[in-house]
Length: 302
Image (tube, rainbow, N blue to C red; front, side):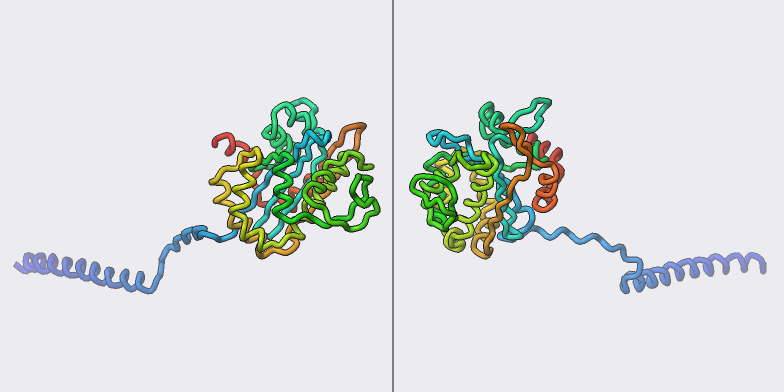
């Protein structure tokens, strides 16, 4: 009888211990979690880009082309890099006789342009600089002079034997027609290389001398006017995405435009861009860009 009684007592006793462990364990776990022990940190949600916020995503690159056949000069090619966050606008004049090996064939940017228009010139620049050119704008005489009028002309030192200009290197005011004549001048001693440098310097000076706030305040209206005068692949969506950064750059920046002289070597009638110069430009102004291959792939997917 004694043995049977012991068995009956043991079962309830074990059950009580088991329930007690569960209760105590639950209390301990609650205290453990309450004080944050063993908590796995979740990565914070990315901060969404708020409307009007200027970031590196606003950076973009355009190829500007001035083509005025009546001036009897080759088109003027200008690479423009916009860096709204840094409030910088970089102008790189590209000589029309710049050559490079493209798809196994040696061509100039002018050859590409004549064979396939602005889009082909854009592809040439992408391959030579190993960057992505987002958009292009091709200006005729009327469109270019309209832009010059919007900015208000420029005061610049001219040292070229052009009718109607002071050929003494002195500062003189140039209106839109004179600016167009100057950047299309064919008799610079340095040939197309000097013409490209001059064009980038004149455009930079014009931007820096303009009233930035006035440009920003009238940007929407002026863009609508100009975009209807040029040949371009810029869309209304592109403008909407970029305009806040551009307006902010003009309104709050100071001397935002920077002209760069494309370094290279003259080879007869051709100009060979310097690879070291190109690498330096990429390092200083395109560092935020993804590698060109992935970016070109994205463009093709679009």
